[in-house]
Image (cartoon, protein in one colour):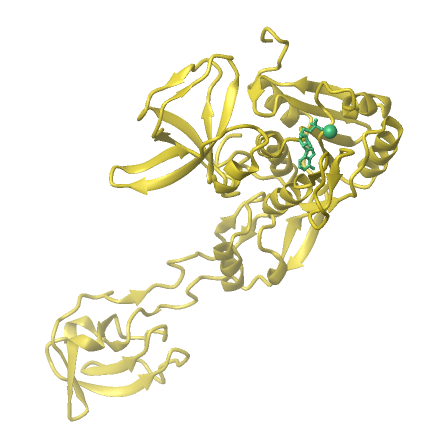
Length: 408
Ligand code: AMP
Ligand code: MG
């Protein structure tokens, strides 16, 4: 523990993962609904891809050893056509990309390397046996394991499933993630702003982050900072979701009741204050099959809390082998200083310049500054024991692209 009794980041993350289990629900979905889902089964190839030896070029199938002489062109094969008979010595078959190689032929010469005179083709550039032939099973072998459980379905993977003749797949059920914004001051995006009012942005940010993580957001109406209201609404939301996120109401203010109400609902509080900035107050509580993350109200803190703690939990529930963001180390374009011993998460922009990739900060780093988050494409992490970063020194960068990559 640190001087203020703040739990170190790594211990908090460990606690979250220790209290998170694989979600047992599995569904079978058609490919059109499979994008972004996590596989609940391994996928084996039931057939070779390609299914037969075929031409990689538009050209002539022939015996490589016949290459010198003009060859009689016996037939023309479109991509879907199979040769009528095996190739005899001195013959060639005109063949389109993808068409099966006729038995007897052992190479394809591309059309650009031939001339045709009186129905005979002459090869201008000899080829070796095997040239321009795609072999049966060279892409995917029958029986091969193509995907493992937990892998997330990208557009390319959905396409591969189609190639493999798999029209439906078993995927993990999406965790239903409740979002309960707290705060007497909150109004909707379409409502006028008056002194003392703040528009509720966290519901929308969180719903987007939940979708991006592959889960299903369930956004509840704003709840007031009244203990009884909050308790009753939290209780109902916990009962109807797999995991509940609240925003706001976890600081030291006179109207911050999330943690005491979680206790009253019988949840065990695993942590409440973390050695990080922004996002120091984060409540993590579980009990009776319920899970609550009480995230802070500040728009940047809520994102940091989600990305650092909630998303790894959601990915663990989905069986993903990767629980962390895409990480790189890059030179920081400017100086940075701190001396509070906390782990800092700064908003950064990764860009490519003449010297290669680097990251710069997005200016004002206050935890309420949604603007700086809107411009950022990455979080820059400055570790607990690191007090200064000189321009050009390497820093840990976590991309905000929503891709699961490595360790949490
Ligand atoms: P709290 O943690 O409840 O004290 O809130 C901290 C700050 O975040 C206050 O300035 C709140 O007005 C603001 N805030 C709380 N909830 C939201 C929300 N849903 N959307 C935008 N700002 C919020
Ligand atoms: Mg509040």
